[in-house]
Image 1 (cartoon, rainbow, N blue to C red):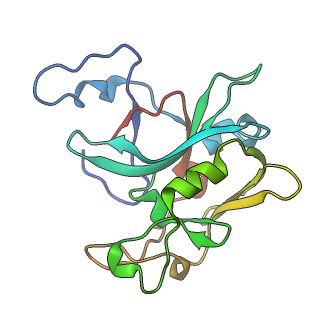
Image 2: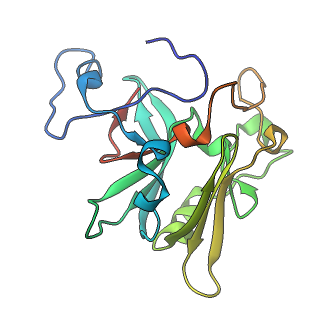
Length: 193
C-alpha cells in the first residue's frame, strides 16, 4: 500500500492471529482499524492512568514505523487501550515539557532528545487530566501530583521539530491532515501499516 502523507493507515493485529508464510504482516490487514480521536472524543482518554509508553509501535513486516503510544489503564467504561500517534517517527514530532523526545543524530546540535528510559520512568503512573487537539497541534496534560504536572505536545510551528534524517525535510502536516486523525485509540500495541 503506498503511503502518501504523514498519517499512516494502520490495522490492529487480531488477538490470536498466527503468521503464515514468509510475510507475516500481510494477513492482519483484514483486522480492525483503530479509532481516531475525532471519532471517539477526548472523554475516552481523560482521567486514565498511563501504565507504560512505547516509541516503537507499528510494523510494516521488516521494521518499525516508530509510532508513539501511551498504554492507558482499564476503567469501568473502557478496557485497557493505547493512545497512539500514527506518524512515521512520531517521537520526532513530540515535545515533553518543552523538549523534543527524539531526533536523527544529524539534528543533535540543534535538538537535545530526551533519554527514553528517563521519559518512561517519568510518564509511567501519570494521569491524563486534560487535552486540546487542533488540526496542526495538540497537547496532553499529565498529572502525577502537585509537583508533577507535565505536557506532551505537538507544537504548531514545524520549525520546532527536527528535520527528517535522510532527506532533511521538515516534519509538517500536509493539507487536509489533522492531529484529530493522527491520534488513535487502539485495543492493542500490535499494529501494522
